[in-house]
Length: 153
Ligand code: FES
Ligand code: FES
Image 1 (tube, rainbow, N blue to C red):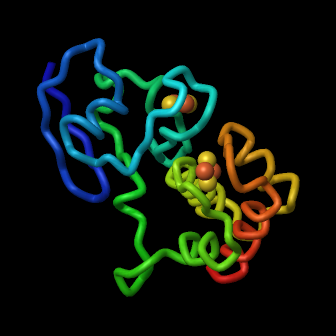
Image 2 (cartoon, rainbow, N blue to C red; image 1 turned 120 degrees about the vertical axis):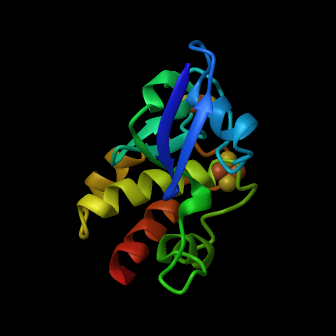
């Protein structure tokens, strides 16, 4: 079926199979491989994108649902000068990135949170990141990075 949607500010028209996942459309059709596949069943958050303003697991979203939507992936996240977004800078500054596999998903969940709530409490940050698993860093540095990003936004 033919779907039309906006991805990182660009209009896309694609012919997709009804049982394709949004994750496969992004990675395999559009080449946006910053969105990662970890578990493939909604448990790790590595595949998080922003879909119509909300952080969602793209491994659980069927491609036809993209029709008429607006999607952001990690490739669409930029600072005002075209460089790193304040969230990306804060993750680097706070040492919240090790292997980096979870990082795109963490950043998309953080972005969805800060777009709606500029001053989240620690509980709100933890809640927003509760679907994102990190095998390496430990969550303290990640939560610190989100706080720092909120201050710098
Ligand atoms: S790959 Fe989608 S939640 Fe793990
Ligand atoms: S930095 Fe390795 S999984 Fe989070």
